[in-house]
Length: 84
Image (cartoon, rainbow, N blue to C red; front, side, top):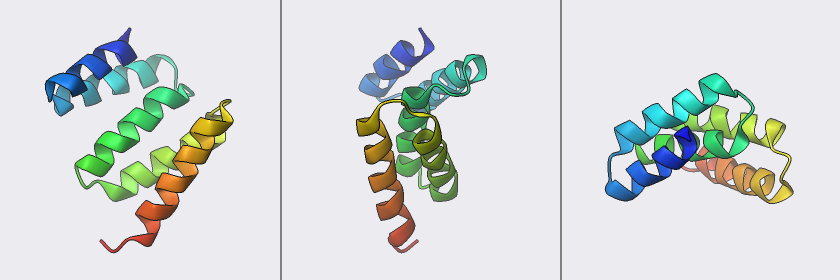
């Protein structure tokens, strides 16, 4: 439910509320890779690159979905390679 609420909040442009919902989802299930990926993308948007990179690394570790793992790896690689 928290992940779904976060999606609604992002669509409404309330990124802080979306972040809170994603953090609540992760508090209940720390290995919820889809929620962690979404949180990482919000952190990229907020220019919190180190936190985004750490979350993407965790997605790569936890995700069962190979496509999600690949997306996380690609985003992390571009994020870590781009100048601050």
